[in-house]
Length: 361
Image (cartoon, rainbow, N blue to C red):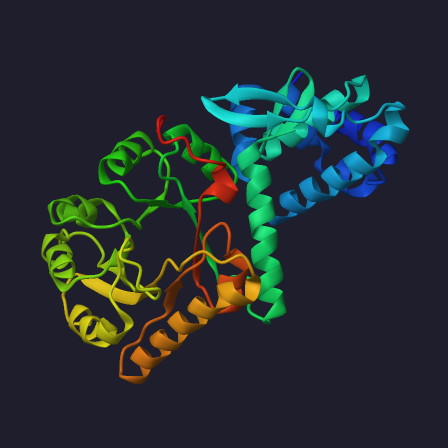
């Protein structure tokens, strides 16, 4: 039987069988060939499905199916989803994932395979559907950002999420890419170079966010698209001189030390204007904005204060003739406060990847 015919037959069966149970007879029947067909079309068919997964209507289907799946599972099978306490810890491609197994049922096998193929944030394990921890954490982070944007009536695309992957293995970065991320931040040059080489098959953008040593500027200028931590003119001059001519200008932010902590890098606010004007004149780099790492605070109101101050400093520079558009501020513990005060890039690591183990990179 021709492959397309097999896909249509299988899809029709899945649509008629599963559609009524999930209250999705129209949408599921139209898309069922992509769910059921995944079991039989082979490797080429699976690649075709993966290429199509970015289509908007496919994502809508996935979301609807997931919601209907969890809503109707108990009524369909007479079984309960296993509680959180029964989660299994496993490994997928060398990185940690938490697997929440769901009950096995003959009618659900095709649907589970369909979700796993259409959305790489999911995978199949022992006839169970799992969502990787990174994908699940990413959903939570995106929810925080979206809520904060709505609170201050900013557009949904006003904030870029920079996944801080320092001290995490390349496998975790690959998993994050499969979950939808493509922009990653690193603080250690050699570790970053190793990951960039390992992951060169992926279309990733790399940002350097750590303290910059003079002997590391050439590697940074050659391999990164952004640098967030410029705090001295000589560092900016070296990045400018060492940026390859065949690459686009290096985007840079000036790091501002708002708290005056000696343990942190950054220019003092009163010296910012002079440094910014000098950096803006350099060739092969483009001054985009400001970055800060404020002192930790537990209350939202206290967290907002330094971010508001950085926003005011950027506005003052623009009033002096610069055209800056970037506020790189906010990390895992203060995402909401940063977005409320105008962040355009939030640098999030722990909230996406989990706690770091600096002994195993």
